[in-house]
Image (cartoon, rainbow, N blue to C red; front, side):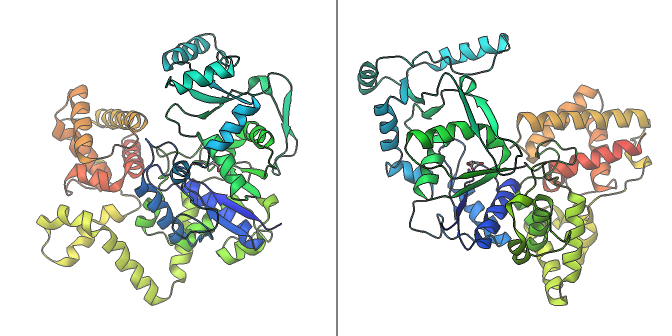
Length: 480
Ligand code: GLU
């Protein structure tokens, strides 16, 4: 049997480092076994997905050299490779009909209000949040006529009420057992008629002939539902392999607040794709000779499912930078020169409008924008303290700003623009009872390393959330 694997990202926002990580493992496994690697776009949550985000995934995988044999932009015999197009082609419907006919799925007419009440009650009683199977025993014929009359409803799977589901995962030493009673009657078709991830992924993996599902550990809990679907649709399930999630240095699940998670960030920052791939390979899969530097071809040669990391590969940016340095220094002169031009050119469009007013010569960019390229800055302690302030007050102000930014990141992770930042910081100044210009000065010095810089809020935007909080934290430390 020829190996067929896939990566199945949802196109929401920028392409994610986790997608690259899972794609790399699948790509290497397919190439190692001379099988096929497929890209499928899972966009059934239409409110969160966009075609632009899908395009960005194609480009990011191309940038990393992770070519796929079948996918939306390369075609193949098992298409379409975008789930919304598969919905339009009516691919999922017959399978749900089959489950309904077999009595393995049912229509549920519970309103969102009822479900919200139920959730609130379960939360208050500290019970697991799950559907109470209210509609499970409705007469199917009656339910079908209510549905035909246009009554809004979802279709749920009828999970067993008793017994256990036991399965194995290649990377885990013992079989995993879950009691069916704790597994929700998963929605398969939403009230808008669209399939949920669970149904769509199982149907597609089957129809696309997927032999191994290598994906992130966060999906491990979904395995019983998926196995149930395979069984009740009369299909053989692929082997499922769940690799550890990428983690921040403190071992929490990788998050925007602690590490940039957008591949575009790394691309723009000037990381060489070879260094980035080497880094992902190194943190996720050990080399049998404990080598640190190896390319994609070598990774394919040594790839072994049993060497995949389960504990959680740590996205250690120091290690990434170390590798980047090795690759950068190994470039020949022409490539290195091209990289230097690329690094500057890639950012010129955003920098020029900010710098234009201050420039006399082209080369001025090197000192006007140095702090935007630098990995860190070293502000003078005295510059961080406005006139008539003391160090403790300046430190407290920085800490308050950090806290406000953290909160903003939680509440509005997608918002990072000059207007929003200005509003947030003006509001902070008011809350602290200090002149806004004093607070802005502290922040400017903290991020630029000196009291003069191009417009502050634009600089914050260009630096990005992670670098801004790092620099503010460093500045607060200097004031201790
Ligand atoms: N669309 C899912 C994701 O974004 C894919 C999960 C899977 O590989 O089954 O991670």
